[in-house]
Length: 413
Image (cartoon, rainbow, N blue to C red):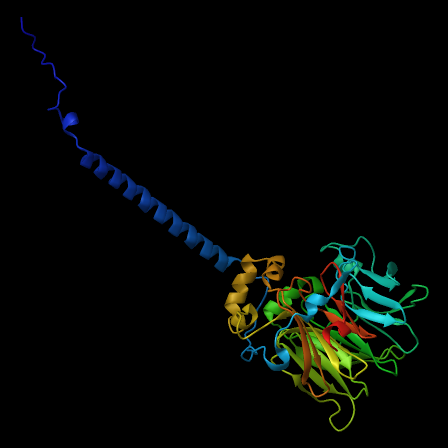
């Protein structure tokens, strides 16, 4: 008997058999479109969330808009050369951040990032003094350990030191005894200094010194520059009477200070604005300030007078007409500087700075006498200060693990 159940035979005429490669492609296309739409939506949502987070996330700085002149071209006395590449490294990986340098006969004094003041004599170094308290050597303890920056000898042979956090000190170079002559806890004109930087000592003992910021400490120096805040100051201090006078204020990162040979004026580097000021101490212009050099080819650090009566200026980084400069590009874009500091650490900002060694010799009129370069930054990436002795330049640094030495006779001087 014939069954009532019909058996379906699988052959080439069934629906499954009739499916073509085109049908598979269509299904795959639909699936791909679905996943593509999902991926696009996911990316859009992620970007939106990231933007919202960046908008909501507070910036560590409160940047101010400012302007800089068009970057200078490196021509004439600024024409690039390789003279700094002839420098040699001293105490490589055995000294860190020898910022300021002082010669006393055959002794060389310098302050380092671990809070010590070193005495280097005939190729040997020893710890002369420590201004703060241990532990030292880290970001967290820098304010209590101290960071010796600008230093000079006074007329009595004592080493006068500006510590970024602690104040002004007098150090007996024979015994290492330390005496604090001014504490940063004492306000100046109602504001406590946060970042004492450099100093010079007049023949009568008066100390002229800079406070880079009343907002930022030395360890936040990149934020100070990125913010372009103008709380930098220059003061004079009489260590005998303890009389303190405010000479200049409203500077964007007040830095190196240097008296003229006749002590008629004081030169002050304003790092963020890439310029140097002249403040008159004597004569008909006493108490007045004027721009000594403007639109420098980099950010000036310290300035030191040599025996010829000219000045050596060290540069932390350069700005050139033919190269991109983040500093110049973001100067009138405070929102961009705010965004950068939200997503980039200070350490990363330091790494983004182009390595280019540069120092200038300038005369009393602010004219460039000569420039020395390391265009690749492989030997001398930056210069904080220059000390000249017997035809030799000693180059300091705020963060490099060595001291550099350049014999001028090898460069034709």
